[in-house]
Structures are given as C-alpha cells and as structure tokens.
Length: 439
Image (spheres, rainbow, N blue to C red):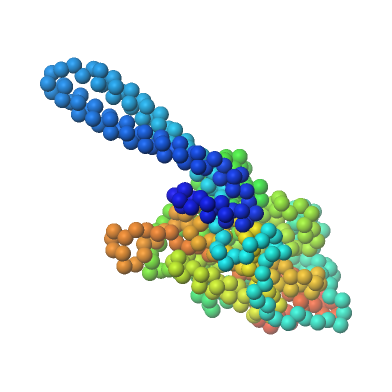
C-alpha cells in the first residue's frame, strides 16, 4: 500500500503497459487514501486531547472539585474515536481489496505489447525433425496405437479429460520420474509431495484469488463469492491449479534463514483447471485439459540474486527438453501477455510437427516480492544483527515440465513411417528398456 501511494504514477504507467485501465483497477484510491489518513490524523489529535482531559480530571478530583463536565467530554471523545477507528478500518479494507486485484509491475526490460504476437524469441534450440511422410498430430497417433482414449475419458468425466492406456500410461509415469530425478540429482532441487487441495489463503498468496476464482475448481466447503470479495479462509478447499500454490505457501507467514537461501524445491502433482476462459480453444487432443500432470520448480531467493536464479531455473527446465532432444524456443513475454503475479516470464515452446507449430510447455517466472508480500514470506539478511529488518524474499517458479505436453511432443517428434513411436534414449531406462511403442 505504501509503495502504491508513493509511486502512483509509476503504477499507473505499468498498468497501462499491461493493457489495463488504471482507473478501473485503482478506482478512487487517492480519495480513499486521503480519507483514511484524515481519519487517522483526527484520531491522533483526539487521543492527545483525551490524554489532556484525563490529566485535568485527575487534578480536579485530587483537589476535591467537580470533574463531571470534563468526564462527559472524555466519553464523547471515546465515542468519536471509536467511530474514526471504524472508518479508518473500513477504508483500509476497501484499499486492500482494490490492491489485491492489481497485477505485479513488469520489469523495465519486458517488451511492451498487447498479446502473444508481441512476444520476443530470444533463443532457439534443436533441429526440427524431417519426415518422408506427412506427420500426424498426437491425437491420431495416440488413438491408432491404443495408448490414448479421449472418447472413454469423455464418458467418464466429460470434455477435456484423457485416459492413457498401456505404454501411454507408462510413458506418462516415466516422464514424471525422469524429470524429478534430473532436477533432484543434477540440478540440486529438494523433492516435495504437497497436498493437492489448498485453502483460499494459499491461493491469495500466489495470486490466483480473488481475480481468477472462475478458473479454479472448488470443493463444497468453499464460498466462492466470499473469496471473490477478498475474504480468504484457512479451512476451505480448492483443487490446485499448479504445485506452485502449495509449494510457495509452505513458508507463508514465516521468516526464512538467510543462510539457507536460495531454497530450491521441485514437486510432481496433478493440476486442475476449469479453463473458464478457454471455451472453443484446443478442443482436439490433450493440449488444454481440466486435469493434467506437471513437475514444478519453485525457488525462494534473495532479491539481489533472483535474476540469476531465474536464468538458472529456466535453464533447468530447458535441460529436460534437450535431454529428450525436443526442439524448442525460449520466448520473453511482453507486458500484455505476462501473467498477473509475474514481473518477468520466459515461455519455453516445444515444436510439434504434427501441427506445424510451437506450443508452450513451460512458463518460468520471477515474481520478485509480489507473492512474498501477499503470503508474508520474509528473511533476515545476514550481517544486520538482532535489530536487522526483515525483508521479503523473491519467489520464482516454472514448469519442469508440463508432463502431458511433453508426452504429446514425444509422440509427434518421434513418430515413424509405420505409425510407431520411438522412445527417446534418455527415457528407455524408465520404460523398462522399451525402444518403440507399437500397436
């Protein structure tokens, strides 16, 4: 709140760069802030007057004189003080709710733009496979091999669900194990297995609530309307949209040991997304699902080190693609395409020859102190002594990788003329030595 108050013009400029309307998001922030500060100032003046009156009442009583009039004034002051406190608290809550819907401020190096068309490719890796036949998309390959059943999934659960069969199910499991092993054994992450349901406070901490409530699946003990108003509870439940939420909130309301930073965690979880804003998009195949698997990378870093940790985290995600020999590119998202909580994001996009396009397979973001402020995650910088001031950490995360999209990328890039799919060499030990998926 203090930062917005002192940098309102900067905040408004950054919001416009995102394509947002500052007036719609900030509302009458200036007026609310002015009224709140006036109420606080009046309260302080009245408290000073009340202290004077208390001394005078004491003196009169000690002298045996009548203090009734001063005592009546003191009671009136108390009523007025209570009213001012309620006013300040109500204004404070209005400002808090307004600020909870304001996205993070993007970094200066983030290109200005309005959509993915303005994103900037900063790196390409790998050679796109060439075929002497017309490559097929993954949904055709999966069906012909008997390893992907979308029709029965729809019977079970409706649209945007999948059933993996036989070698398809084993490939999904192999990818999860391969990714976790690489991140823990080579990159030094600590594996975490968190709950797959979280409370509203956790979703507020990472920025999904209140703005994106409609994109989440909630349990029957959750009041979505209250969450939309910014009333966040610790005893309700939502299905997680990503492991970012429970893993980041592991340290909510905690002060981290500076000596242990950066903390690097990785987690496999299923992810659940209502995809409310995706009607009509990616209706074929498994690109956009209500339930999918993902391996997540999460870091807690000192502010001065978060840029370097962002680059490392992105390279760790890229390492999976390179180990599987999947062509990809790294894209720096523009202001209009950067996520709500992020200050800077790289998307990794994998090449899909069956569709002749690149598709996102990982988003690697530096949130700076945005999530840490919401979740109250701090650390005490070393060398400041007992009186040193606690500071907010910087949080980072990225997919390492989205498992289903890696699965389909393998099918499309490793398909053979006879309709079979070769297994990347790095995955064969996880597939029991299987070299090829055949019908």
